[in-house]
Image 1 (cartoon, rainbow, N blue to C red):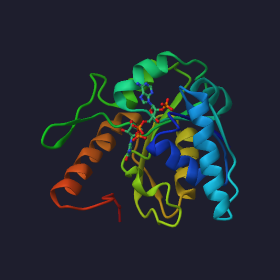
Image 2: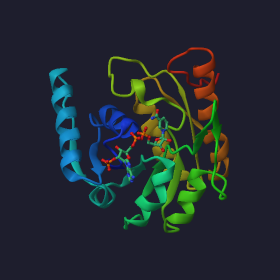
Image 3: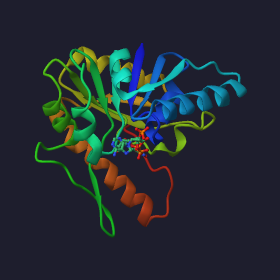
Image 4: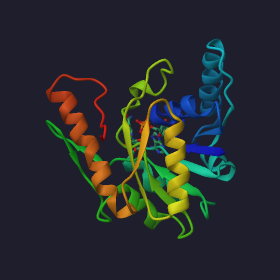
Amino acid sequence: MKIGIIGGTGDIGEGLAHRLSQNHEIYIGSRDKDKACETSECMIKSLSEMGIQADCKGVTNQEAVDMGDIIVISVNYRHLESTISSLKGFENKIIITPVNPIGKSDHFFYDPPEEGSAALAIKKMLPESAKIVAAFNNIAAHKWKKLDEVLDYSVAVCGDDLPAKKIVMELVEEVSELNAYDAGPLDSSPIIESITPLILNIAKYNNMKDVGIKFY
Ligand SMILES: NC(=O)c1ccc[n+]([C@@H]2O[C@H](COP(=O)([O-])OP(=O)(O)OC[C@H]3O[C@@H](n4cnc5c(N)ncnc54)[C@H](OP(=O)(O)O)[C@@H]3O)[C@@H](O)[C@H]2O)c1
């Protein structure tokens, strides 16, 4: 599949590219094409040193949307609106959102927009035919790029378009030891997104690293 990553030079975007570029065509998007090319070339080089061939190209965010059948929106919640409003061509595409609107005081807290979640806000910003699926919200970026690290977590996936959700769940299952779980419609996205500040607080107050969730 062709996967475009908006904000692909960031922690999660680069991590996803590392894990998915062996089986899919990845387009790492950026506001700055040179930065995207550099990220892509670095990744191809480091994977090739491990004997892994990666299919990846650095592009602009708009080109990532144009090229991808699946688009990952991998920018911070506060840049969502300006980023999405500067792009076009989302019609009929599968849109994956790992975006978590999180606030921080002495602890982390869920800070959703009035729509109820980042995923529901994205739905409002995009054309009706875009198929929004929330996934990869609850795994810290840290281990994504280290291919020798096992990602042994559960991934809650929600969305209203069932075929799109199935495709995303299959994509999740391809990554390391991740297991995808259907968490219902996009209306479930506030629950999924709000797990992340919980995880961050548990990591902080218990001096733990790479906290994640696993369903049995
Ligand atoms: N990091 C994690 O552990 C983690 C885990 C789960 C979910 N998430 C979610 O995944 C999303 C991405 O997180 P991240 O940690 O990968 O983000 P990040 O590294 O902070 O940023 C991602 C990309 O956003 C772009 N960006 C920066 N400032 C921008 C601006 N003013 N306008 C538009 N784009 C801008 C940058 O790309 P260019 O400069 O190349 O354009 C950057 O590489 C977030 O919504 C987060 O909630 C993160």
